[in-house]
Image (tube, rainbow, N blue to C red; front, side):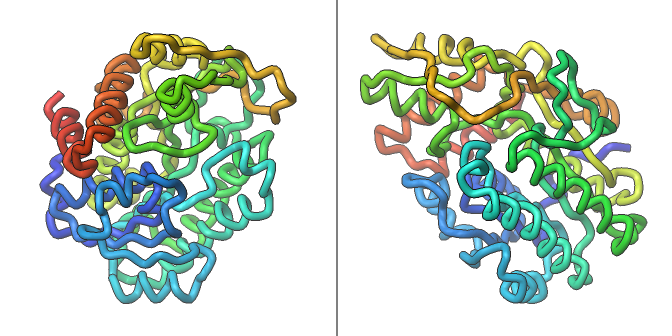
Amino acid sequence: MVKKDLSFWKKRKVLVTGHTGFKGSWLSIWLDSLGAEVFGYSLDPPTEPSLYKEAKLYNFVQSTLSNINDLDQLETCFLNFKPEIVFHLAAQPLVRDSYESPIETYNTNVIGTLNVLEAARKTKTIKSIIIVTTDKCYENFGLNKAYEETDPMGGFDPYSSSKACVEILTKSYSQSFFDTKKIGIATVRAGNVIGGGDWAKDRLIPDVIRSFDANQTLKIRYPNSIRPWQHVLEPLYGYLILAENLYISPEKYSGAWNFGPNNSDAINVELIVKKLSKYWENPIWMIDKSDNPHESSFLRLDIKKAKSRLKWSPKWNIDIAITKILSFHKRWSHGEDAYDLCLEQIKEFNNN
């Protein structure tokens, strides 16, 4: 029987790597609101402003601000905190940055994950581990198909291939060093995650908001590229359900899982911009025809496995997600507390 009673998290000891990032901050806020004892391991926030600072997460989450590649420091944190559950989100997450800094990308994403797995196998309290990768880990042949968990790994750009390496590495470690009858290990592949509190560069929706707010012309790359857009709470809810089931039935739920939107929300970049532009008086955008690095033209995830085996399914479509993002941005801009805004949206999501 699939468990999805969020009371499971009360007083659980949970370690989150990458908790200062956009997605990690949302997850840490959600876990804290559920009564979990959360410990975060990450670099300083990657953006200014950042959700971590705006939500004052340092008041709620124990933290070590350090590099995931400092294995001694990482192992010390694991051994001292004694987590039951680990969410590994720390990563270099941007395709364009991976072209500029490929060695850093592989070091962070591959060796960083190796370090997390090493620290985890020396920590006897751990019951379940979630390794977050990406929808871009699949070998993309440019076909109009949704990728299933059994499809081959690959990746044209350094970021995508680094995440494919993480998938292979995690499977190897699971088979070689972890007894999945006792410890559940899963990799999770989400779509293009969007939400309030994301100020990253080279991400479409933050770029749109920055440009339109400043009455500047937005330049968009690859307007016809199709992506599986989803609000950040969608995959995080899937991760929470999965981690609980890994804890209870590790052998049954270990492996790879897709968490994406319904097919109707796998739409192209230009349509996203058009949907957003309705909320500004004089939005201006143009297609960037400069020589941009390669990115896949079509991405969509098959989510039948999560729907059937975890009883998880998307709640907010792209139009609802956009309204939630813009509401967050407007209210935060007018001085409302980011932590409270996140909590409000989490409650709305849970009630759907």
